[in-house]
Amino acid sequence: MSNTTKLLMVILMVVTAIVIAQLIDRPPGKDGTVDRENIMGKNSLDAFVSETHSYEDRFLFTYAPRNPGSRFDCYMSYEFREDGNTLESVNKRFYGNVSAENPIVLEFSRKENSTYELEATIEDKGGINLHKSEIKIGPAAVENETTTK
Image 1 (cartoon, rainbow, N blue to C red):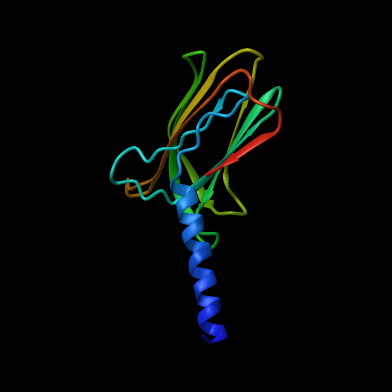
Image 2 (cartoon, rainbow, N blue to C red):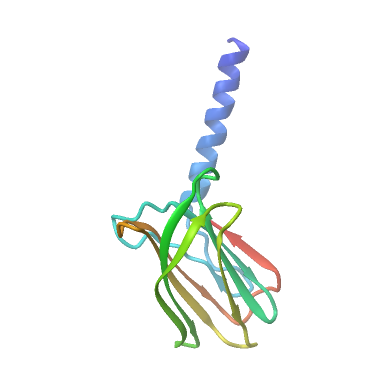
């Protein structure tokens, strides 16, 4: 077997392992954090990757294009809830030139012993769904925990 064939086999195995890892639904952690991002609807392209940073006094959510070379002009709608009560609701806020270097960033205050939920949708100018996700974070989340999907 040639070195090129061996290299291609290794690359294929790595890519397969990455795809399988992304398909596995991760259960809630021992700290109470639940991170479930679902494509809610068949028309979602899931063109964005989100990161959740949980700190003692705040949350930081970032949304960047899945493809590092992509740039988007898009609209984001989201609802942020604390213990089931809506704290902030935004409908189609425009974000221009969104890229890996210029992601969408949302920051919210956090109280001890509360449960938080964020539902987010990103659409392009034509209304095509680029990303839909929801996350629920319980009160026992560890400081500085980062979850990426």
